[in-house]
Image (cartoon, rainbow, N blue to C red):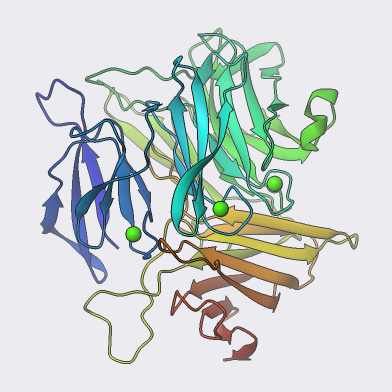
Length: 463
Ligand SMILES: [Ca+2]
Ligand SMILES: [Ca+2]
Ligand SMILES: [Ca+2]
Ligand SMILES: [Ca+2]
């Protein structure tokens, strides 16, 4: 695994970001083995797989051109990417995720229209090439627009678009909207930010050329903390009348008012979670499986005594439900020059794979769930390298697990594999090798259950 680091060069007036790649060597990093990129970026870049070779590439606007550029990871060559004239929004919340229900990651861009309205573009991956398929404007009343987040909010197997923001400049009136998969309508899924007479709101982003603090945009961090199959979120809110800001857990619950009807679901804020309430001046909160047991815990970053001082807090998820999960990580199946002989190359986790399951819930109804792996990387997106999908209280097998990966230009068929009868509470590693023959029986699904590793080669299982 390599590491990309962006930095603000000292005494650099333009505010452009430099970037350096530290090359991983097996399990370590050698700080002297690095490449400083020969271009600077207007905004933090997006890590994606533009050419579908399962080697991550770097996407962004550089100092050389106003057209987006891609730096291919394989040979570190720059290429123009996409023929768009629209400006990118700063900070962007671009994403590399399937938004067209074909298991192939598309490119989602946050841009400005010709009249400088905030908008969202979906560049659909068609036979390995990206072409503009959908443009959606921001919700009309939204004055401050936060970072787009993606989750299968309604649990139908297709990816939905969540957008936090405010209806006034100072975020006294905060809101979260949802655009369901394929739909162009914005549905409010959280509007009430008051608790016991106190009004809370998102913390608006302040853009400075030479920031004195780390600028943190309005962001929802997604995870299914109670494993009911409906993704929840963590958000940072500030007390409108006071000075405190805190992390809050937003639970995805059935819709109980008229305005969210079209979404079927909505967010409910947990105002009184003791452990979160005790952390003052929180700036980022995200989910992480600290104990590697498939249950998502919480990590909170808070301000310390000085401006540049931060503290990291970890909170164990004590939620004791008889709920089940699957944890999935999709690797590349590649290795460079250090693959042990005749051993299947594993590679590392990738941006872009799409995962979906179908099962039957405790009441006998069909239930789907889906997630994209590493779809966003910039501005402390802090996505997990794996996905934990909640299954609710049903101990039923997963009827189907589907995994799709990006593919190169010109390839018509979708790279997608399917496994059946997966045991709940397993941790799955998908090795899509060889990547170009998904329908062969070779793509490996390795699963960890108890103390044993099992290997399923599409249909057959061995220990
Ligand atoms: Ca690539
Ligand atoms: Ca797609
Ligand atoms: Ca959905
Ligand atoms: Ca949930």
